[in-house]
Length: 279
Image (cartoon, rainbow, N blue to C red; front, side, top):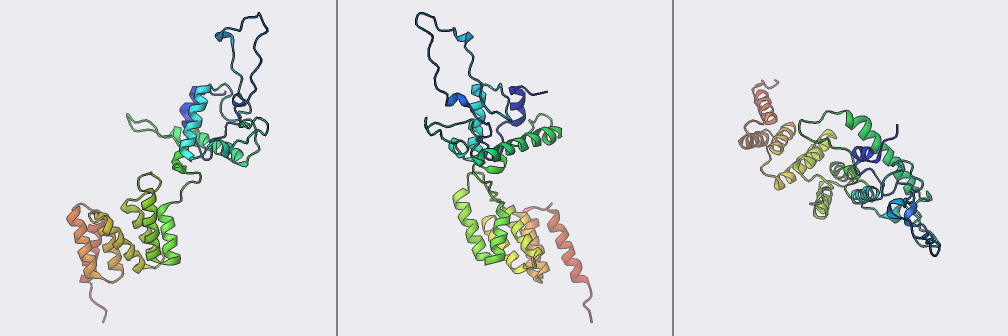
């Protein structure tokens, strides 16, 4: 059974990817005005007039209201940073958007993205129990796009790739550039966690010196992070710097006496010291 417009709105909220767009087309914008009533014949009353139906709606409800349609479109625009002409062609004669046309590939992609997001919210998100008193958070365009036409890549993945190919200095320089441009727009995670992930990736790749360099740079930004000090302590121990490891782990516990990572790493460090050296 097809959902009503209000029901669908509750499911999708503002939705997916390039979707400024997936509507198919709202012919009401581009239609030529109809001639008025013949002379001497009164115009129909407001309640007798019916709005022209939107054409080529393949995903959204065909009976969706004008205001709801525009609100949905605006939410998609904010989520993707796109505009009408990114998915809708211009009519050569009227120079207005032909909203019913499917000529642009972006619009076809957008329609598929909208179907995907509807399915995610209906088939998966809706089955997850929400916390008492909290509204369930649906997937929207902004969930991935963060206001950009193309969803931003994961910051840790980008920085790891640069560190691997060009070294830690280039990676940290790029990190600072991205931070300068996007610090407050919500597109990237600039918490200490991102560079901890980068360091862990490098350690897994047997690049321990580079991993330690990344953590030291992170500590310059977040000197009061117990997790950072604990991670640095573990990596220093693995790299053979036991004195440095002990100092970092103790610093982590000074900041957060309950930090389990630091406790375990320090206990392991002391156990290794007690082991007899091979003859």
